[in-house]
Structure formats: C-alpha cells, structure tokens
Image (cartoon, rainbow, N blue to C red; front, side, top):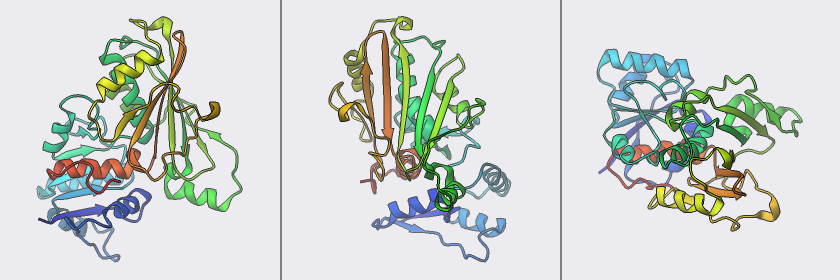
Length: 311
C-alpha cells in the first residue's frame, strides 16, 4: 500500500530534510504542488484533501492560517505541524512518543499532531521523568542550557553564517521569552518557571541540552548511577531514546554538541556528584529535533513501524 503525503513548505530546512528521509521509501508517494501555485491557499487545500497526512513546515502565522482554512473547508485530513503554533493548543497532540505511557497511541489516533521544538525535546525528556518518578517536585526550579548548530535558525540564519565570518558562540533568548519555553513548562509538568539559556555556535547541526540539578533539592537521594538506572527503566524499549551509563561517554572531559548530526535518535548522559548533577540530552536538531520526529509521528499515524525510514 502506498500512502500519499503532502509537505507544505517543502523548500525550507525541515521540509528538505523530510524529503531526504523519504528518498528510499516505496510505501509513500508525494502529493506535488506546482511552483507557480505553491503559495495559493486553494491549491494547497486541494493537495491537503488528497493526502493521507499533511506535514506543515511553515512559519507560525502561516500554519495558523492554513489550518484555519482547512478547518473551514472540512476536507484537510490529518496534519502534522512543525511550527510553534500549536504545541500547547487544545485539540492537538504533542508529537513526542516517548513523553509518557499512552502518548504513542495518542499520536497514532490523532488528527492533529504538533511536533516539539528541538530544545524542548531534550528538556522535556529529562525533566518529565524527574517529576514523574518523584525525584523532584513539580515546583523544582529547573534551568536548562542548550548548544545548537546554526541550522536550527532556518534559512535566514544559515545564510547569515554563510555570508559572514561568524566563529564565536552566541547566546540568545536571554530575555526569557524564547518560543520553546511554553511547551517546556507545560509538557514537562513543571510548575515553577524554567530558566532557559540557549547558545548557537558555528557548526551546522547537532544539539546538546543540559539540565543542572541540585541534589539537596531532591525528594529522594540519587547520584548519576541511580538516575541512569531510573531513566533506563522509564525509557526501556524506546527505539530512538537510549541512556548511557555514567563514565561510558567521557570524551576526555568534553561533550561535543555535534556528535549526533545526521542521526534520528537521542542519548541521555548522567554526570556529577550527589549534590551537583547534570543530565544531558544529545541529538540532531534536524533529526529527532525536527524532521526525524516528523517522520516518526507520521509512521505512527499511518500504522507503520515508527522507525521506518529512520536510520
């Protein structure tokens, strides 16, 4: 059986990466839209109505507009949205199968799926289990640091790095209004405000999200080994999330942020002492943080093995 997929916004970074993951698949066919009408709402709605799943790779407002038009037309079918627009919206399922028990089934049955932000993916996969397993209270004052490649900023940032001699890391979002913060808070279950400090650096792709922790604020004592064991149980049998034992991934005291570039999975690492700990999530902002996540959710919605087409 061949499923029909329409990618709206196929020329953007996420859309192009999804195309790459479709390259060798014989179970999918793409609904094509002519370059002369790719901005026409009517033409796009027609493509959506003929697709089993539509994947939106658009800016927030453009996603809101086409979804509203599709809802009015009543013929859109199932939608995966890669923007920030619907991640905490009622009626949309958060596209992170590993979030908690039952999330995979919710995605499979959903009509509307909102893909997580790349930074949020790493944070939520760390903070959610800490609260759910009773290691910390929901009122724990989480902070999160993240280093990302410049492809996470889309075409404009990629062009900026190509055109200018930008070799220094650059911190951003320091006003604490980063667009991922609402989902980081809502989907992790954290009640206290999350402090988030992202940094973009001079490499193309790869993401390292770290959450520092104060053991004195834990509800139950746990060092790196105990946390590793808890997280290994929480994420057991997950194909695209794995836990690394403390000390097994030292890299001479350094952690590269680009080690998972080109991959679709994510690893969790555990460091520190019982009073001061760090949990890190390492993955590709274009893989598990974007296009790989879109394909994973699409597979679930089509009733296919979720890692189909994901190396």
